[in-house]
Image (cartoon, rainbow, N blue to C red):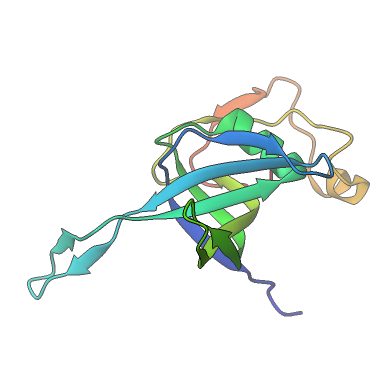
Amino acid sequence: MAIHTQESVSGFIASDPQLTFTERGDARFYAKIGQEHYRKEPDGSFTQTETTFHDLVAFKKTAERAHARFAKGDRFIAEGYTREYDHITPEGEVVKAEEFVAKKIGHDLARTSYEVDRTRHATSTPEHDLQAVPAPAADAPRRETASSSLALGC
């Protein structure tokens, strides 16, 4: 079976995240994100070039969880797709704009220290996944510092 892939984006949260609701009542997460860019020099070193800024959105449960977990300055990795749309400027002009729609988002493991809570959530874990994962030993700690894996799902 082929490996499923999607677009991804990484960077930092450049604005205070916002949680709003669509006309249908679905949660909508919005943040301006920044991406740092570098140029490799002939001697092998890297020079930082201009940082670019973009719009990132997420919807429904992902939006609610992202709003609860992300703050300005956090480093992230997201999976989803880029969407183009028409934006109306304050002057009434219609311009093309784009945003990244995150279906999955998580903190960037290489740039973030955090703890993982492995408490099972019966409503969010399929039964077959519970059977495939061995139960922790009775004396095993329930929380540990993440150092080798990152789950992007929210």
